[in-house]
Amino acid sequence: MPDRAHVALYGLDIAKLAAYYTTIAGFEIHEVDDGFTSLHIPTLELVLVRIRPEHAAGLVVTDPPDRREDTPIKLSLVVPSLATARVAAPALGGVVDPPEAEWTWGGFTRVDGHDPEGNVVQLMEPMDRPD
View 1: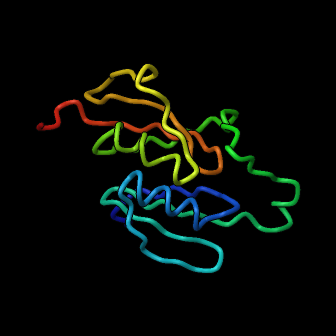
View 2: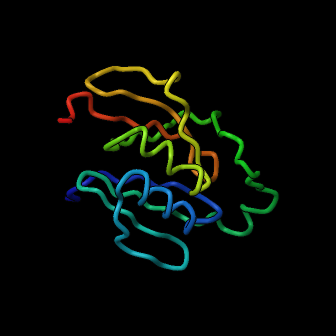
View 3: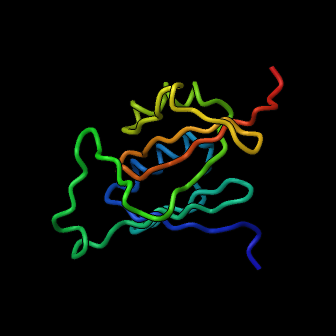
């Protein structure tokens, strides 16, 4: 039985996605192959899978990327600091929405954003962090 949950995220530039998720959410690169990169945190394996060329034809990631809000799934990740993620995201091709968009629920301050390919990601900062 696996020791962590697994999520697959398909993309055009998996190296750019890996840089985003390792920097923003603290994932560590576990395995890199020609068609995928496996990232780990203690409770989750995020497998970035390159979209096959025959399926990638016609797919365009704009600069900045258009947010893909037409999917029923949203990845939610705990980060140490929303402010730090907000500053780091643009250099990695992503966005973290402004503080005015934050809300609290379940012991976390939460805000949406998107990765370098426009996939919506919710970032969650624990409310009980020691200062």
